[in-house]
Image (cartoon, rainbow, N blue to C red; front, side, top):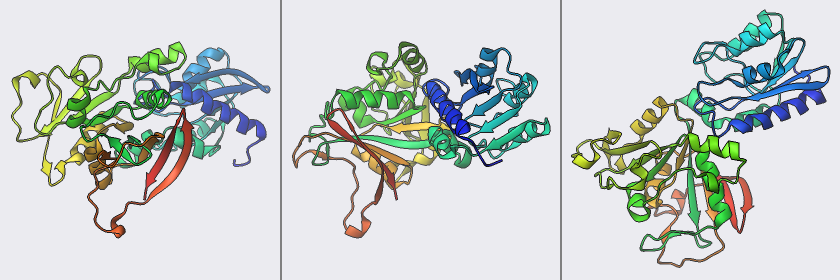
Length: 370
């Protein structure tokens, strides 16, 4: 079935809104929304709970109590396999749902289409592809991890109007205003891991945590976001990070990445560490990406200085750049946005503007390499 009604579109749009309620808490699962409609009336809604909790469909079915004869609108194909919870396809069948509309199929190549096929085999009317582009944007990191074995990697960068990211001394707080910093807090909250460099740790003693007071979210959503702190990854080839660094405290998980040949100081022996091979441009980033995939990281955020961000871009690992530009000038002695030692105009890196909006007094560019 491909002819969707106005009601179908409206209900799927609502399901996408509901799905966003789980964007800060559902990881590593994708945040999914479900709306149950019967006789033209919404009887229940649900979104994916924290890992190990109910999927969106189960939440909606439990809220409805009786879903017989209903149509289920879901932003992702109902699962058909057993994980920490039972298969949602079977729950929909048992509940007596007569129609299921999915925005997209499951991107996992091992299970894609199986949930929809199970529903059809049970005599349920099934269709998919409604508002698919919007649904894919919602869970882009999960899709990337399923299809290529690496989550979506985005770099957060702040610069002045003249393209500078820090003073020559390394001082960088604060280039942008409060609204932009609040936006970054939400970006952190929607990330599974945050990567930074030892230079940033030594210069700023950053914590890289999500802080409820700075999210400007409803209290329950802010609490959920802070309960699931992202993994803090520090690229520190020579293990220069002091054990007292905020990024290594117990408020959130941390991972120290260092060169395989580096001797581990006694103070850092109790830290979660990942030895990595050296390359001409520093530590090998590919094994790190493999480790983050093993840890089921869908959304990976890079918050670092110009050298690490430039290395990530040159390695082809950045899927998106989020550049916050402040209406200020920092002068020619300040540090550049990225460390990119290019000599010829032919070497310039093309970027596509995906989105541009004003955040407080600053501008936020969403850019795609290539």
